[in-house]
Amino acid sequence: MAKQTEIIKKLHVHVDAQPKREFRDRVDFLKQYLLISGANGYIVGVSGGIDSTLTGIMARVACDELTHATDKRYYFVAVRLPYGTQIDEADAQKALQFIKPHENMLVNIKPAVDTSLEQLKQSTGIELSDFHKGNAKARERMKVQYDIAGHLGLLVLGTDQAVEATTGFFTKYGDGGADVVPLSGLTKGQVRQILQYLGTPEILYLKVPTADLEDDHPQLPDETALGFSYDDLDNYLTLKPVSDEIVEKIEEKYDKTEHKRRLPVTPFDDWWK
Picture 1 (tube, rainbow, N blue to C red):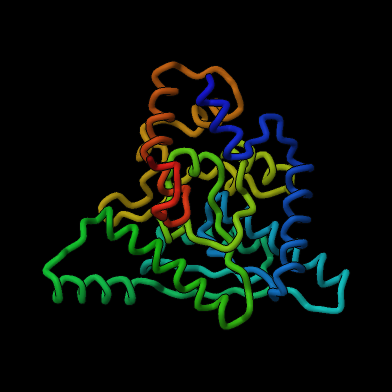
Picture 2: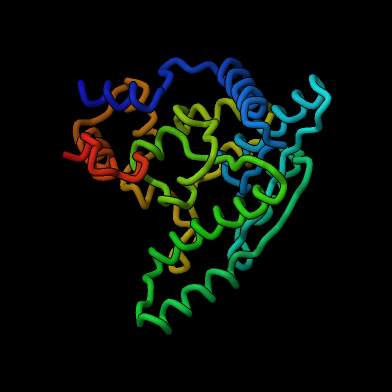
């Protein structure tokens, strides 16, 4: 129980989160941070999943409200970053229709990823596994977002939330590398609740989460990769009953992925000793 309480506190999980309040607080945070940063707006990669959908709508609303309240135009860019043809492209398009970004972009990352991995193989003899190729895709997606953000003066939004932070279920310097992470502290269930409160189409907020990074396992559900359900994780993070076996699995994942929740380690850090 002590470990569970520590994780909930470190990840800033609101056990009794209220959708209306969470949405309002996070939109206000995005507005305040834009003013502090001097940036022109935000960019996020929209996949059609629930996390990028909620992140996108928060960013668009924040930019709209700031534009109306100031003399400056702020804008939100949604970028599609498929590797070739995305199997669930229709869901991504539905998400974009709901979010209503100020600008849509699309960059196919397949040529860049394939060329990079082929050069790696030719130069070193190293051929990445399908799993590690998935991480290369995630990092290429973030690189593209930073390229666009640098050109337009935007900040890059991450879409990770509390359950991914707990398990380290993200790519280091891929989807885990961003300027701002507005969903931080939310469970997967809370993300769905906020989307439902906002009137999101059911097909989007009930969508089965998948990182969809592996060619050999397209649309592999996150829960299959993790070995336990998001309901289990939600229950653990909101102090609801969870079996001892699941608690052990979650806390083992948390401990093994501690390095992913840290900035680059230095000789003067104490946490790793």
